[in-house]
Length: 134
Image (spheres, rainbow, N blue to C red):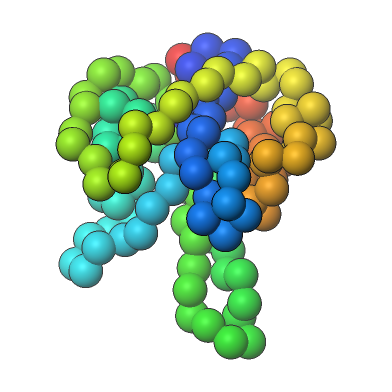
């Protein structure tokens, strides 16, 4: 979930077991049983970076393997952030970094920013930048 604060987006740096290295990305997590996608987004936001959002906008939902799995990812844009931490379930504390929206192309070219959902989100952010109120 892309998080916008002024003219910056917030990224999370966390260990990626699949690549056995640290990766940059956006807040993400699973939807618990009985939880809506929006409620899960808010919970993950609070758990991973300690913020909640006054504005949460669904940008899109995508599937990764529609021929093999019903799994969907919901991409929300969170803005007007305020502190509201919630205890998380991560094995280590996550690092939060700020990145200028005007430099999203350089973020996409990094070797440690490879999640396809996060890459897609950067393009969606560029499309929506003019509608963000912060």
